[in-house]
Amino acid sequence: MGRVPFNYQHLLLFRAVVVEGGASAAARRLGLAQATVSEQLKRLETSLGTDLFTRVAGRLVLTDAGVRVSRYAEQIAALGEDLAASLVADEDARAPRLVVGLSDVVPKLVAARLLRAAWRFDERLRIVCVEDDHERLLAQLAIHAVDVVLSDAPAGRSTLVRAYSHDLGGCGVSFVASPATAQRLGSGFPKALHGAPVLMPARGTSLSRDLTRFFERHGVHPQVRGEFADSALMKVLGKEGIGVFAVPTAIESAVRQDYGLVVVGRTEEVRASFFAMTVDRRVRNAAVAAMCRHGRSWLDRAE
Image (tube, rainbow, N blue to C red; front, side, top):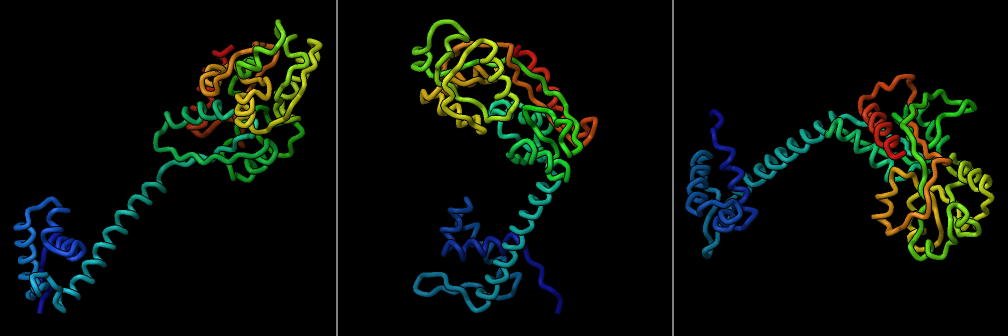
């Protein structure tokens, strides 16, 4: 005897009736008329040559055949869901992927602008961000665990890892503080920072060294209240009035708006510079190239 053909849509409708506990409930969930549901159930029973339900005390109850068909309907529905999920997974697997090593000292607002440039280039791009210090990220770059490293300093000559630095541009810095902290400062910049509470970037970073030299040139000796690898934490503490701190002028407006800070002073004597490092002399990844172009255009305009 050959296989009895039937409509798989009718089978899935039968499953909905079983799950919902009746034809009327299934009809409401599916947005169909109850008469339509009942008619299609009858067609399924006809195609299978057996009754799937019996009525007991006014309720639809599965027959033995109905129980068996219900099991198959569940398996078929599950296979359909697996198929849809696998197609989504395949699409995700085909999406281009970029692993970005982000140095702790790069302000998140700067990183976000650069990453948005990569997404504008390719909206399908999946970016994986790995945060660590400069040297450890370069080690990961060397073994291709990351595709690009964003940092505030180029790869130094003493670095054992072969990496090429691509200048993303730079700008001066703005000193910002909470309104209450700014009000307590003396007059005149940078002399107003003498003895003032200051939050510094982590020791050993380019910005920390440049700020220290800037203070020395102007005979300013601030009260350093902390050193921070995490620039986001420094902004939160600055908002709470703990001290004055420096940010790249390119993100000054966003920092003022997001944290309610005011500008104490600006200088071009201290430069906030940023670099993208790759294992290739030329940037081969198109998304990284988009970040480089945007960085040079945006950061240099902030001068």
